[in-house]
Image (spheres, rainbow, N blue to C red):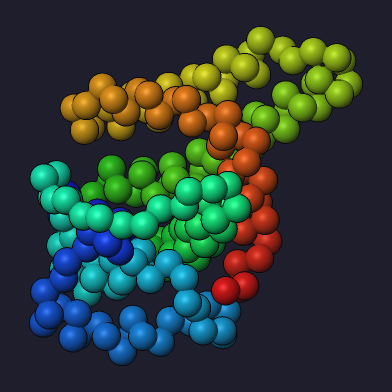
Length: 191
């Protein structure tokens, strides 16, 4: 719809050779804070394409095979790389956002602000539990509401109710991924 998918996944992405040739030098010499960066290449290439004025589009009937983690350790390492990539390339994309649709700006901000709000809500719940022995209903309601809003927006935009099931991911997000994202933010320069 917008011609600006913010991350074309590695195994699913296809680029015109002429477009890639224009950006190959920038793509192959990724640096972050003065150090070579060797993760998040798919997101980085997508941002470079958008900055150069190309469209990036989603093709719903595309099929691709990929290898996915089959145990917790590799899954968390993958999520750590993805979190670093998201944070790093969000900084790169911020200059690009004024040229794109407002919904994409909202999406990029939400990808970063959403986890921050979820982390603050979770820390508030933990503090309430430690201090008072219970968690206030409004804290649980806030977390549930944030989850349902995000899943509902995705379901509405995709016109697919299955996105509501993503709300089941919230406990994994709170107890595993948020601490890992905090670590990723503190170690952005690591590769």
